[in-house]
Length: 109
Length: 122
Image (cartoon, each protein chain N blue to C red):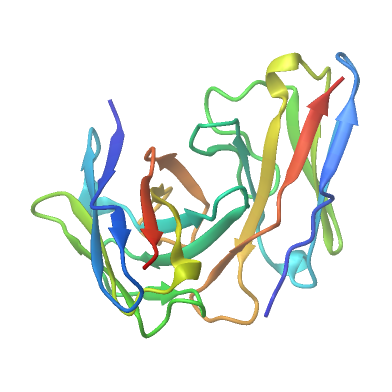
């Protein structure tokens, strides 16, 4: 089965830049979407089509891609950004299927 | 206000069935694809199933194909997930999520409900 791979955790100090990666063999041909989930809350989409921000998402969130790796970058991290982040794309091995990455816990030190 | 409210979760025995519902409001439900996504306790997100605005395209995760059925009633603004032959590993919080377009797999999921909990145990 197709997998999207994320680091389990990323830690940064307030004001620094956090980079969360998502890797998958088919990513050069597919869009990636990013979701933020805070404890006890439903996920919120923070990036779509690799690098487009939904309305209401701060511009410190940005996205980029290079080959099989897509990156969510949070510049000037704030305490409120501490959350789990998930990437999502189409499932390369399941027609009509979707897949999520395993998630990355962002800790703001 | 755009809103999704799930219901129908609960405790059920292995092998039995449950039907989840998701009530949509605040947007033209019949214009958008919809998905079910679950989250096992303390774990990450897992896509379960999705369908297009007119149910013309439907997809399932390998782990539920043949046991779960997704459907929608556009007139009543409702999304359903019929869960048969339940297994302990189906225990999770089930979210419904609205797609950005009429295609459930296109451009991500921009609105999520708060989820309904399903526990499969004897």
